[in-house]
Length: 586
Image (cartoon, rainbow, N blue to C red):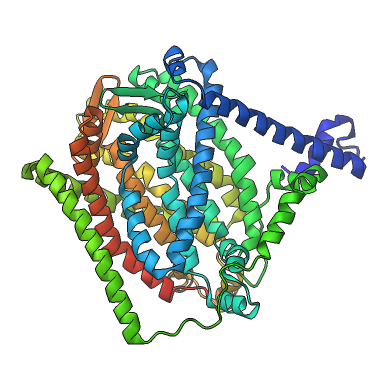
């Protein structure tokens, strides 16, 4: 729908008459609708923030209810938590990914640390942080809200950070040369060149990160650690209560509410961001089918919005003129021997720190758990690793060709985007009733038939990144391939797959982390009092978290982190190096 048709919709007598409203009237309606939208947003945020800072006793006085009249308020609280978490994830991404990409020494610490952070399951973060957040805001709901927001943050930030890091590592050489010619400082180069180059992929990963937050919203809002049970008002707690009471009617209403919220997010936030980021495409020719957004069109034509945001625009222009972090045309010269010595010293220091940390971890484990426990956890980690690898392969075979097909057709991407967001945000918990009833009725093996639930946390990362890579693929390269009559498997091998390979790596890497997290809720499922478990590390951590066994939680989380870090180091990192060196758009 084009927003320019709104005046005719407001004045039906003019519809189809060929009479157009005068320009002042059109501008008035642009300003009026923009003002109403911004005002409604501010009112809802103010109301939500007020509810989030209530005394903690309110949670006991107003327990979660399955009355559908509560769903709008629950949806507002959940949406506000996810918005705060994604903004925090964006700030974290800009700082963390930039530092890791700009400094090789910092990257040697930050990237492995990011692997560890990604591998820690959401339940692991909740287990270790809930007490600290409650102590930080005693007697106030803010402590529990902060714990829930932090848990959602941990399901969003790592994917966005990997996307930003991959983009900064893939900056074309001619762009770096242009920065030298124009004498841009490090600050100016980042805001005028590097961040715009990374923006399309970052926005698509923001979408999938938001979906990742929806996937774990139940674990984030309905918190159970040992004897401590806390349920925050939200869609996640509503779903958890509906599952425990086997209320299918309430689950259907929760799905309908989630669908509406996701569509609003798509229309009011992500569709405008995708349309805006299209101008940052790296290519010599213009996009043939640029994405559009009625919200972006509305705000760009509103005089009121321009006046309100003009101080911010002026301040941003002033900040971009600041010459911070002066960039030199010639790097500091260092002989091979000096570089080798510096790398050796730095590696030695990192090794010492790693050995000390590992020694303390081993001492803790050996004094708290038995060797049999360690062997059991190692076997369970191997089983879950096998599931993750198989699911990544299946998801890649399915979604890489489909993602390319969608990404090269902006009109189709416009239709698929909200559908993919909804499917990726669909909590696995809502599939549990079908899984439990199917396993029970047909006497199926849970080790096999619970595994497909994990794909809900894997495939969408790959799909969104492939769409982002294909949609930003330079048109001039596509035209060159057409002129040279490159087609079939040769086109995939020489043109498209090399072009989207960095995006695929980001999607596959974060998909593996999503699969490990999904194992927590997918290997141990329940419907009412009936439950099934598959052998694996995810089920082990879920059972220990429910029992409040901190020692074995640490053992399970440590095994998961170690497995993920080793897999990333020996599989994904070499592929990242190959991508940065061989597959650049130069």
